[in-house]
Image (cartoon, rainbow, N blue to C red):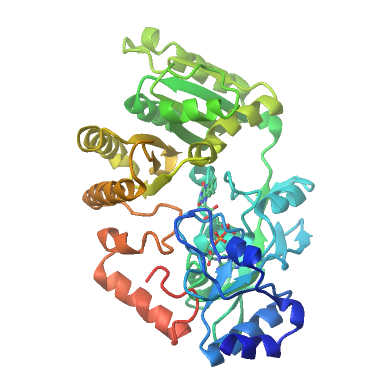
Length: 466
Ligand SMILES: Cc1cc2nc3c(=O)[nH]c(=O)nc-3n(C[C@H](O)[C@H](O)[C@H](O)COP(=O)(O)OP(=O)(O)OC[C@H]3O[C@@H](n4cnc5c(N)ncnc54)[C@H](O)[C@@H]3O)c2cc1C
């Protein structure tokens, strides 16, 4: 009834209720929850989003904002008859200001399309990760996305000057425009960044850009190492080095085997080490970089300690750089393809990483020997992804029950090491039960108060985060 009422107020082609469209737009990459949306809306302007949200609010209809649906926490899943609001048709990439280094975009613009557009002017928006070909700017802002270059550039929120958000009551908030400086009190823009579509729908943004690092200044290496301890020692050396570290990413041998099985070329054979690192550096001084590499490769002679790196390579062309990067970028997809996978995305302070990793490994080995774990992540940010694949001979329900148990073990470790139960994938529906491990009751009470202030009826992305 309410759905018919809302459809009658808008143009006929705003909504789709085709079963395949409902199935596709009602879920995200997590793929765990069954989608069950009532309809999918494809608005074309901020004003149309405002009219739609206002009408849904009046009629008591719940709405789920949806971007590229690459989220891994169920944030864009509509499992309870909600209307999904897809930003897909609002994908305009607008004016680039080469002096201010800003770009105006609509929220549905694809992340990679923004990279392609800005690269034409020697600039970039430095938010980068494997799902960039499908994720949208609105989704990146709503999740305050991380990625492979956080160590150099920080999180998404650093790269947003202004945004337009529409509240559930249909009010349009234009926040901060293209201002670099605006010290007029509480910055509402930052509330919407990372709020996973629970406080408002982001429809437009002014992105902040930076120079695209020049090819000849960028060095990408791949290292094979004995174990995770050696990875952290290499990281400590890279931190002290005479270059700017722009990425320091790690994957376990199990991950490398899986990527190679999916046809990705690797400069070293799986089995060479227990862990591998993709490192990217920006440097004006290629000689100093090579001297540093020489020291790393002759560690035993230099220090008398066991070798730091077992094998490795330095990319000598942009094609080789892309090939080394694809090893890291294809991990999640390779591990998840054709398999039932349970995944976690955890962070701890860098100083606690070694102890955290040792505990995680030891506990999986003793309590869950039947699990095949794939560990990789953004080591330079203290962020580990732990993917577990269902053993072929284990029933799905048994697997999920065992994973729930092992999650408790992981969350307790995060608590012990003052970490976070979600480093960069957000909370959505899947991480909601775990929030209390690393956020305090007082903290969460203020989050709920904010939610009530902006969405008193609780209709916008209901059940997500809190
Ligand atoms: C292979 C792979 C690799 C990944 N690597 C990384 C990584 O390195 N770092 C990282 O941070 N993430 C990573 N992710 C997760 C995901 O890609 C990011 O969270 C991304 O920012 C989500 O963007 P999206 O457009 O797909 O959003 P969606 O999945 O569509 O939505 C995510 C959340 O944002 C909300 N939302 C979407 N659009 C809007 C909007 N316009 N206004 C308000 N709310 C909105 C949704 O309701 C939902 O809660 C990865 C995912 C995959 C599949």
